[in-house]
Image 1 (cartoon, one colour):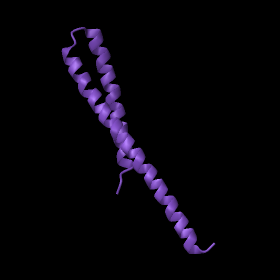
Image 2 (cartoon, rainbow, N blue to C red):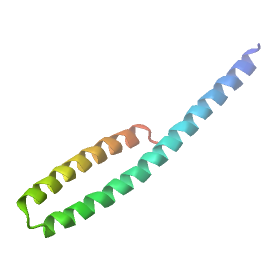
Image 3 (cartoon, rainbow, N blue to C red):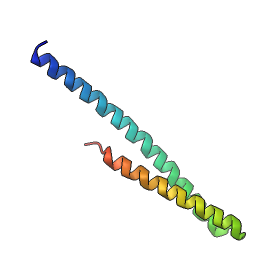
Image 4 (cartoon, rainbow, N blue to C red):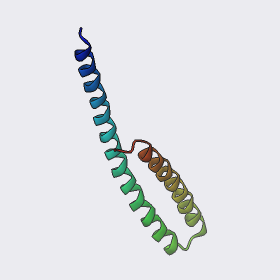
Length: 82
């Protein structure tokens, strides 16, 4: 096998990996949008909730969603498309 063919195959392999990364980033971005929407609705519900136990539970859920979004944003930045 000549060096040109090897270089071509390597280029195709890198291109496939790049496409996978782009698809993964797109999925992460859609999930981040959903998490952001959930975060906003939880904040509204916390403001309206009168029961202290339910309020505490909602705050705990909000912290979990914020942590998930933070991890997702970090991952999305690490796969940054150039």
